Length: 340
Image (cartoon, rainbow, N blue to C red; front, side, top):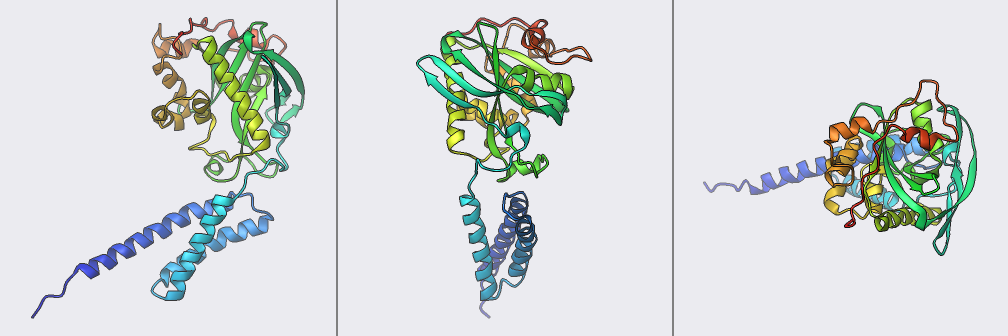
């Protein structure tokens, strides 16, 4: 008796296995993508969230029928087209912290910043909105500081930069999620099309002060060692992105477009560092900067880390001299490398 080939059977098994995995992954990604989407009204968003996995599961279960296979392919294609073309917007009902973006204009070597945020906080959620306009001379840019703020363990921190000028003023810039009023903050939502990308341009009393004096987070400020040319390029890159986002909104993404990857992009870091594990576990960003020689390497990182913590009295509130006060106990700025 001739033996029947087993290759077609194995081939069908692999095809079924592949189809099952693909359908599961699509459902695992697509269901939260719909739930955290900005689709309106909410009934449509929630209805599609329930319907999508149900249709996928039903079509896969009856996949031996031509109609079910066509339905599975159609639903998959429709989701892919929607997700790719789902547009970010600037005209939503934003939470108060993100309602007023900064605007930038330049005249020769002078930067005009409008709507620099300077909120006065009573509690993390109770604040008085306040903004001011300011002009900065690029030739007076004298320092860049890396700020890391921890609220949950050592692995996760919010990371941002503050730019200092010879007259003692500082302007802090933080890459954040732009949240709508109706949505609470969610760490999971940042993996999908839920938040637009937002550059907070603020006084240090606001951006750092709310973390040290109001939220009582552990905040560290590291003096970044850069040449004057590199400082200018970095500051200008931030300004260009602030202006760009005011006209062309983009989605925030926890993996690819977050507070840390944004800094590395603005700094024109190589791809190998943008893919470093410390980018996702942002609490270790400062150690990456140390490895790159951007911080004071005359002492070990553990010592530098301890010395760079901002210490504030228990009852302190951010006042007019806040920027000077938080730097009184911090290490002095190291000499910038002319090669950077």
